[in-house]
Image (tube, rainbow, N blue to C red; front, side):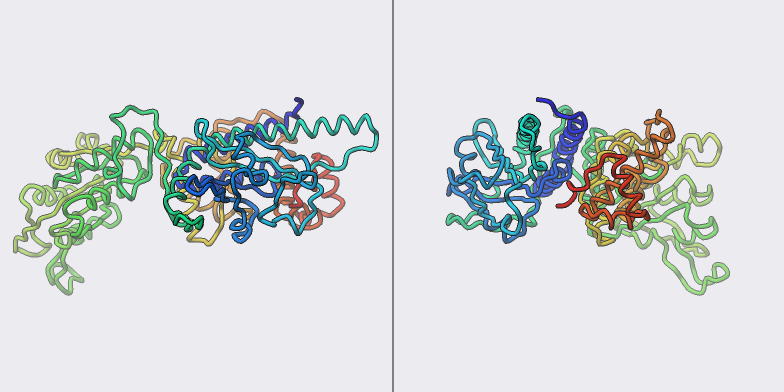
Length: 544
């Protein structure tokens, strides 16, 4: 079977994206929707469906779809052996229908094809299995290639090439069906649990069905869901160790020192410790020691009496008083001056202090969690940090790993931030392109999770086609040095590559309308035609 190299490359990219989606995304419904969307982009798919078999009543229903309305999706119900889908579930064998008009078993139960020509549609249906059991199907509509040549010899060759290409798509869908089989099995179980026994099934929307976490790490690194903090995302081995330590320290009142580079999420760790502790219903007060001048920091932490300094028009409680019976989080503690460090040491040892300008000793019951991105031992040697305070804080140190040491979490975090900024900016980003994923994975992330969040916010805002592309990411990720992908071609080759990508994106947005695409790109119709011819772009395949 001869498949063009360009098609082979596209197939590899398709399978890579499906694999990443199935591995990283936990919401099963989202996994299946994204898989269908990825297939639509790589296979020029008009419609796609994932059906599941309800073993209680032998009914096959459409669970997720692409290109179908909710009404059409609801109509897609079959019995075992009924129509193409029913036959695939019954026999467990894939079916390729070169032209749906020539196939009497094709039912079009959804009635989604009634408003369009059907003499140029082929249909592929693949069984989804777990072991030898059939649990559903994966199917796709594709447009048939342009009419065959009149010349009999050329026509025979064209027909052979088309059948080879169709068989290639059958093989691709078979691989994808095996990739998503676990997700479909969980949807099947949920579907059967929600069935009322009469064939009518309650909606599964809104259910947060999670794919079990698959990890090659040892059993010792597995984390129970009760140990996992609700506010921190991560599945990498270093994060599993951190989650276990958080769970242990949260049950005590020990002073904790959170260490890590800027942007790794030290405040989230402090918050997780507090809200998993016995003080969770008590105050959680945060203070950044580097945010205010030294003259104000002492008053902010310990409060002041009326008239204690110019502008002190009344008594004010400090952060420690406000945190009484709860927790105080001191971020950037390495920035505190030595006099303030002495007062802090007294609180840690004696649980008491005086307000600025006051003489009354105030007792407090406060748990202290401190954080810094600086090396406190170096500061001690330089005389900038008290050694006794360091040992008092360092009772239970926790180190948050940098993002470059938890590469497997990058796409998980990126997806979370896309969803977050979709909501904030009312956008509809559905996918991160393969090029963007490669760039995210190659970059060294000196700014850690905070830098990744900023990158994804920017990309969500810039995207116009609901897909994040490489050119939506910041320049720091796009340079050859940063990404580790030096470009070896000529300048003209690079420019042609960018021009080709922009033209394809414009044609996608305009559904193959050359004139509208030319207007978006600022080109005349003539120049647009020349560019399309130069790059051998078939604008007709975007007319969906």
